[in-house]
Structure formats: structure tokens, C-alpha cells
Length: 636
Picture 1 (cartoon, rainbow, N blue to C red):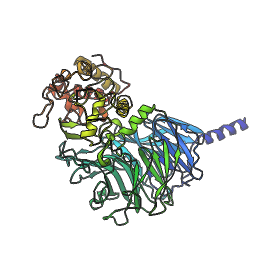
Picture 2 (tube, rainbow, N blue to C red; picture 1 turned 120 degrees about the vertical axis):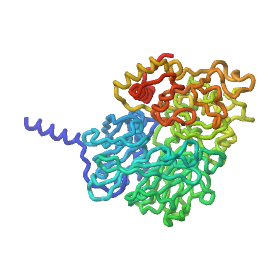
Picture 3 (cartoon, rainbow, N blue to C red; picture 1 turned 45 degrees about the vertical axis):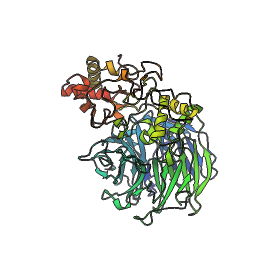
Picture 4 (tube, helix red, strand yellow; picture 1 turned 90 degrees about the vertical axis):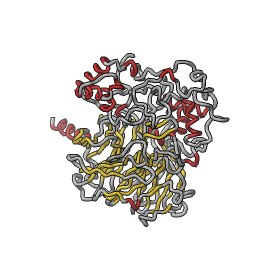
């Protein structure tokens, strides 16, 4: 009996994870690639393969990928060598300890992951619920949670090296910009990027840090976050929605330093990476990594398939390091993250869409280069879907973009919306998300495109690329563009079927039930019914819907009282009916971004046709925000 009891105790001890309290003094930042504390093992996530791969850094001979949750997005390594994996699609966390994998739910659409210094706690951002949570990794339970502002995404945790977790700071970057005080949509300086600095206990709202706009645009799509000795380094886009369009400022890239303890943006040290005096246009900074001494910043440029090295030794006069050309070293397709060895001589670049890792030589100042590639996952997409996904995320192909300044994903990160209201040839237009497009033609809020291949027009006239199809660009709603180019058709196939709707946060069941009843009673389904949550569909064959040269598919337009003659070119007869899927992730609303919240949409009777009480408005707004692919549709 005593032997059996002893075996049970030993078994429980083996199953209870308690990593030693041996912090290494290095902050933890969310990344798709991570190194073990001794640098002997590299971990990388494979989002389209639902796995992680462990690679020995001496032999670079990857093992068999380890299955985890769906769409693993970030990985961190605890002091004991165990890997902690954030799975975005199924909202879970996986703990990989040797051959054992334990997965448990954490919440909808986690975007960022970082560990406390001891490795006992994981901090996650839940982008759908606007929350930051702390997970006790020993018990697999949520130990603390805190509501923060919209779109929390990248996250990092300090490590002061004192063997304590409770005195650290948690830094959260909100992915999308917010309106400034007095700011307006569709203006270059009307919005601002922002961060929140929290205590380790998540007990208080923390300190918000506003990232003031540059003269020509504001910080948006805040994806890259790194810490170093009291400094926050933030890699982000700059959006300039006003006309005129310029290839180096409309959508560009930047690096912003912030002093952690005073929460001050160091304006004199900000770097516009597309500045012609500094570099050439680069696209979509997804991550930033710092050298061990903090004197080099390496910015991962997903749209440019490259890494840019920046010398920060003179803070107000940064220079490019010895990469060629233009301070960059090429990587694989759509790089998403970079981790640097503790001695600063090697960098490991995760290339999302080529399914490999680039090993970079960072030791030689003048000859930094890619040493080798390590394949980490098999392909899971069809050849056409992969080709379309690569083109969607790429800016360096001259067929897609002039001088590599913009990609489709610049305005549609991960197929969603950058929440920016742009001044376009059709008028002021909020960026529409691209999920659930199949079966919802015509496209654009003005119903000005009857097939996805009509985006060839955007490639040639907006992005200033040479185009994917031969010959001159066809008139919108005119001769079909489908079938003109295999690449254009592959891009269309990805847009139609390759972008998923983000999962909504779980709401109050009673509110959701009441909101659904109101939705049905108010006959909202007459416009927003059916599997796609819109009744919009083509009233005839592609190419036949504008026989007299009309610019819109007029049969699908609905006037909801939002047309503004001063800012809209098209829209006098109304707009196309957009889907309700993923509303929680696509504010502001209406074609011009004039409604900041769903409550504002519902309090405009011209749109809904019904005057709701405040309580009814709250219930209906809650239901609308809960609609995702799992929601049972309402019949038209």
C-alpha cells in the first residue's frame, strides 16, 4: 500500500509543472519563433499546419512537427525548456513538455503571448474580448484578467533579473489606431496609435501611451514590440488616408521608441523607414528584435520578404547596417518574426509562407547574410491557394506594387480591415474586411465590382503595379477579368475562400437571446439574412450588369441615409449590403466610418427603420457583435 501511494505521489509530481525560478534577465515578447534559454533549441509555429517544430541550433536538423491547437500564432520557451504555444483559431494554449502536449482554452482570438520571468505565468491578449489575461501554467487556469481598450495584440513582459515576477511590467500594443481628441476619420493626423502599460498583477487599468502622428500619417497596425533596458521599441505602419497618394507615405513603415518608466514617446528618435534619405520603401513591419547590447534593431518586413538592420548607437541619427541592398537581407516568403542568439551572432527568421526558417549571420558588420534555410512544415494549402496567399501578402513583386510600397495586406492585415477610412475615387470609404466573400458579389460598398478579379484595377491604379493580367486593365463591370491570368485567378481564389472570420468573444447568453429576438422582430434579416449575413448577390451574369457604362450594380443598392454629397462620389442611390460577420473586429462602421460603435449604428433610425429603447439597443448591439461563423443564420 505504501509503495502504491509513493508511486502516486511521484506520478503527480511528474505531471505538475513547476519551472525553476531562474529568470535570465531578458524580457519576453510575443513572437512566432523562440529560443531556449541556453540557445540550443529553436521553436517555431506553423500556423497553417497546426503544429510547432523544434530545431537543434547546432545541427539545424528539424524534428517532426508536434501537433498543437488550431492556427498556432506565437511561442515562448520557459526556463525549463518547455514551449508555450498560443493557438489563435481555437483560442487555446498548448504546453509542450518533451513528448507531452497539454492544451486548454483561454478565450477568443488571442493575439499575443509573453511569459513572466520565472515562466510560471503566461500573459495573453484576447483581441475579440479586449482583454489581457494571466494564465497560471502550473494549473492551466486563468489567474487574472483585465479589460483594456480595443484590439490588444502584441505583448511583452519585462525581466529585471531579481527572481521575482510580481514587480514586472506588462506592455500591450493595440493593433489599430484610435481617434485622437478632436480627430476625424479620413485625415492624416486624425488618429493615433497607442499602448497600455500594466502591472504584473493586472489589478489596475494601467497607463496609456499615445503615439502621436507623424506630419503625414498616423501609427497603425502595431504588430512589432520589443523591450530593452527600460525602452519599448514599436514597429508599425503609418497610414495617410488623404489625397494625394505618394508611394513612400500613403502606407509606409516606421519604428518608434518609448521610455518605459515615464511612458514618453521619444519623438526625436522615431524612424520613418520609407524616408528616401534613409532607405527605399519597405512594406509591413511585422516584428522588431534588438541585439543583446540594444544598439541594433532588426525590423521584420513581411511584405518585402526581408529584414532591415538599423544602427541605433547615435539615437537621433540612425543608420542602416551593412545589409545589402538598402540595409536589408532577404528572407523567405512573408517573414513574421525574428529571434537573436544571446551572443548576437545569429538570427532566426520565421518565414510564414515558405514554411521555413532563415538562419542569418549577424556577426560580420559588412557581410550580414542568410546562411541557410531550414524547412519546418509541410504544405497544407493547394498550389493555387498558396500562390494567391503569397501574392496577397507581397509588395516586392513589381506586378503588384510600384517600388514595393504596398501590399494587399497593408490595408487588410490577415484579411481583415485596418479600420482606416480612406479618401478614394468612389468617395470616403472605410476599409472592408475580406472574410466570407464567396457568394456575396458584387464587391466594394459601392457595388462597383462584379467579380473578385476586378481587383486587377486596384493593383494597377491604386497600388501602381504592372498588373497580373496581360493587356490594359478592363473597365469595372465590363468585360470579365476572370480567366485572363492564372495568378489573378489564384489571388481571387484565396480572397474568396482563404480568409476566415475571426471568432467573437462569448457574451451574456440572455442579452444575446434578446438581441436575436429583436433582430428577427425588426426584420433585419430582410437585408442581413442568410448564411453570409447579407442578401446581396449578383442579379445577372458577370459583365452584363452595367450595359450602359454604369459604375455600380444598381439593383443591389440600398439607401440607408448615409450618403454625404460633400465626400461621396458614388452612393447617391445607396450602398451594397455588407455582411454582419465579424463586426466585433471591424469598427468603425458604415461606408464612411461615421459610426464608431454598433450602438451608434442602431440609434440612427434611417438605417434600421426602427427606434429601439436603450436596453433594446444594448441587447441588439451585443448580438451583432457576437456574429461569427458559428452563429446560426437568420433566414431572409
